Length: 159
Image (cartoon, rainbow, N blue to C red):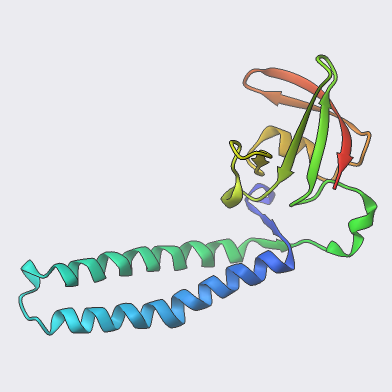
């Protein structure tokens, strides 16, 4: 069960709740108006406005369900201890691979924000590196098992 938890800051939780509120109380009303207008054209079989509104409605309802499911498994991160210098969500972490002495910097993010190709790669809780790094401290050594083998790193910096 703990693998399905979503760790978020209060700021990120507020964004999720705000998006859910917007979808339920604004977008649903807008789509209902579009559907009402499209239905007034009578022939629904060849009514592209009706079809577009139904497609938009399906997308909004799917996103509402996704957000509600995410909010069920949210764990709020206590940010009061930022000075303890542990790897947490949204931390910028620099690690050194011990065998090759190569330095890499990652931003620790939740799955929905992951972007390994950005200038500073954003790694999610699905990655082996994330699982090895989370809650560790500066100078800790970690072993990461990946499909390419096992690698050992030292945490050099946490911001």
